[in-house]
Structure formats: structure tokens, C-alpha cells
Amino acid sequence: MPIRDARCAQHPTHRQSQTPAHDSAPRGPEAMQCRRRALLATLACSPLSMLQGCGGGGGGGGGDPIPAPGVPAAPAAPVAAPVIASFAAAPASIGAGQATTLSWSVSGAASLSIGNGVGDVTGQASKSVSPTATTTYLLTATNAAGTASASATVVVAVEAALPPSAAALAAARDYNFSAGGQTHLVMHYGTVIDEAYANGGAADRVQLLASATKGFTGMIGAIAASEGLFGLDEPVAQRALVEWQTDAAKAAITFRHLLTMTSGLKELNGASGWLDYLAQPVDYPGGSTFIYSGDPNIFGLALERRLGGEQVVDYFERRLLQPLGITSLKWGTNFADGHPQLSGGAYVTARDWAKFGEFIRRTLDGTWSGPTLLSKTFFDQVLAGNPAHPAYGFYWWLKKPVPASLAATIDANNKSQFTRQIKPIIESPKVPGDFVMAAGAYGQRLYVIPSLGLTVIRHAPVSQTDNYDDIEFLERLLGG
Image (tube, rainbow, N blue to C red; front, top):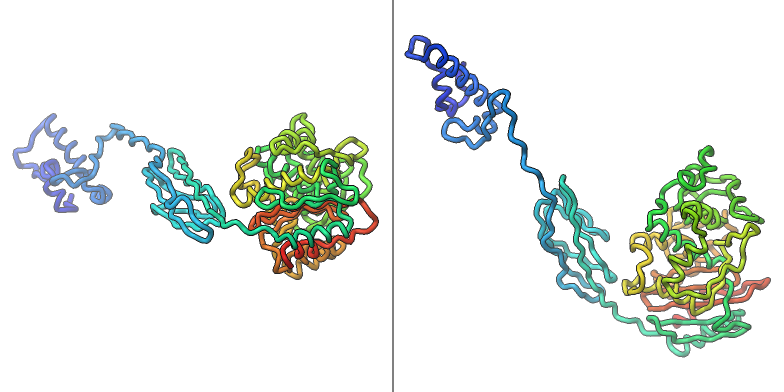
């Protein structure tokens, strides 16, 4: 056999295999051993072995020895899970608009990633970030043996906005009460700076929220998803409204669709209970079209079926109201079957409603230090908007742009609600972009503006006319 590499010619067993038959080569058993060594030498010097260092021949080519036929290879050393030795931000505290550097020391990781929008950082040891609010970053290191994680928090010291002037507070209050308002409560970074009652309102009086009830309902939906009771993109027919499994259109409706008014179900009026909503016909594919309807009540039925015997109102109390110290909320308007109207049946005092608003504001600006009700990831879903209505979250109104063609579709399907409800706020240059609102009929309002440190409450009585104007009130309050 020809020698394939100069190193193979120096392999002692290979040299032996080249000995002519008339030389004084060993005979008998010794010859068998010689031929065996020659065979192994040939295998060791195969083309593949050449690439691996020729099996250790010719002066130690650096490859692993090839075991004799029938001898199992030694097992590979087990791979250990990655180890994160350090992960920190420097500086750990920054001002608004400033940057900081996340640095880490990690061993044994095949991939590295950081949450909160940073993404893949494999092969890197640091990353510059510019958070707009206090943010906790999670570093995740992964390999075939497992995952390791560590967190680092960057505190963003936002310069406090000045409160509205005394004149602005008075102007907003006067307009509120002239339009029939009963409660007027303005908080600036958690401190009440204006509180007044008129037209039958009082500090200890529970007041109707109407559709602003949905603000609580949307948050309880996110809390339930955060706890794993369901997936936001899980079809509700899968484990809750099983009656819909035989209807292809309804079987495609997800929990997210119900929480964003995009189920595509026809609006139902005059329902006597939650079960009535199961028979609603489908007008549009789930997720495609915004229809302001009874979706919160269908969601209530689906949630209750996932609670394993606990009533929805008890779940509200245990997971949302009690942790925030809200004691006055009552379900004053129920269906004939006894279930609460999650779309508009709650009553609460101005001060208790403000507690909910402060939870929203302080979670948005990163200063919330109270009980953890849900993860930030799920909280953010509540105020994220959706493709069918970018200015509407989990029953919350948002100041986010909506394309004109989509706005026209929303108006056409909802009695010009977009133009009446949120368009003037979206277009106002005086209302900050982080504005969010829970809104109900007759001018029930919870406004939250984190960048200005404001939480504002307004209640009004049920009346035949609803002449309250959000922009008139807000631009007075904001110095317009």
C-alpha cells in the first residue's frame, strides 16, 4: 500500500508493514501480531485520520489515539451548565436621557441574551443601554447542559415635572363641575394637590364607573395570564369555553382577542347573563376588527371556568383590590344570573380609584414599591395597543397614532367612537404621549400621565346628556 503522508512513513508499525517477505520478518504468532499492527497503522493513516493528526504516529501528530477494533471509545466529558460570575451596570444610577453600560463575566455559554429589548449578546462582554425609566435587565446564558441567569437594575432619576399651577387647577375644576362632575381629585407624584366634590358627590360616596370598570377587568386579565391560568394567545375554546370547539370561527378566538375587543363577535344587547354571550354570531375573524361590545363579560365566563371553583369577584378581591388597599369597590350592576357586569358595573370612591391609578402610574415610571401583582411583561400588555386598534389596550385608551384608513374603519363599526373618544387626545400637542385613560359613559374618567406625575379622577352622574369634553378639561389642567 502506498504511503499517503510523510509522517506515516515514520510510524514504527507502518515501517514494519513495508518489510519485504524475504527479510527476516517474524513468523508464526509474531507474524500475526505484526500484520495486526500494520492494519492498525493503515487505519491510523487513512485520509480522515490524516486530518485528525494521523492517530498519534510519526512523532505525535496531536490527534486522539484510535482504539483497537472492538474497544469502545472513552466517553466524552460531561458539559457543565454555564456560570455567570458577574453582571452589573456601571453607573447603576443615571439621569433621564443618559446611557450606562451593562458588563458581565460568563463561562461555558453557547448563547447569551438580555431582555428588555437588548437581545442577543453572544460573544460580547458589555452593552450600552439608555433606559427611559428604572429597568431591571435579565441576562440569560445557555448551553446544552442548562441555563443560568442574573439581573442588574438601572435606576433612572427622572427630573420631577412641576405640578399644574393654582390657576390651572381651578380652571379644570370649574369646568368639571360646570359639566356636571361630582368628584375632582388630582394627584402629583402621589400627593393630593386638588380635591373637591360637588353636584351630590362626596369623598365617601361610591360612584358609578360605567365602562371605566373595564380598566380593572383588563388588569385582572393580565394578572390571570401572568399566573398561568391561560395563555393570552390560547384559544378560549381549548380549556374554557369548550362549547365553541365545534365552531371553527369561535374556536379561533383567543383570550387576547376578548381582552382587546377584537373577538369579532356581534354586539349583544339585553343579555340576562354570561351564558347568553356564548350564542353570539361571529361577524369578523378573531383579531381582525375592533368591535366595542360585551367581550369583557365573555372573558369573565372564560376566566371563572379556569379558576377551579373560585368566583371572579373573589379573584378580583384577592389578587387586585386587597393588595392595593381598595376597600370601597362594589359590583352594583349585575346580570339576572348574578354575575357582575365586568364591562360596566363597578362603583368606587374617588380616593380608592386613585389608588389604582397610582399603581398604573408608578409601574409605568418604574417607581412602584408596593405588592407585586404581575410581571412587568404582562403589565405592559395591558397598555400595548393592538393591530385592529393601536390606541386601545386591554380595555384602556392610549395616546397612540392610528392610520386614517383604520380610524375610518373603527368609526364605521363603532358609531364614530374613535373620533368622539380618543382622536382629539391623540391630536392634542398639549397631552403627553404616555397618557392613558380608563373611560366610562357620562364622563367617568381616570387619567394617568406618568411623565407629569399626574393621576386624575372625575366622576359624574347618570344623565340623558353627556356633554363632558376631555380636551377642554385636560388643556385647562395642563395650562392650555
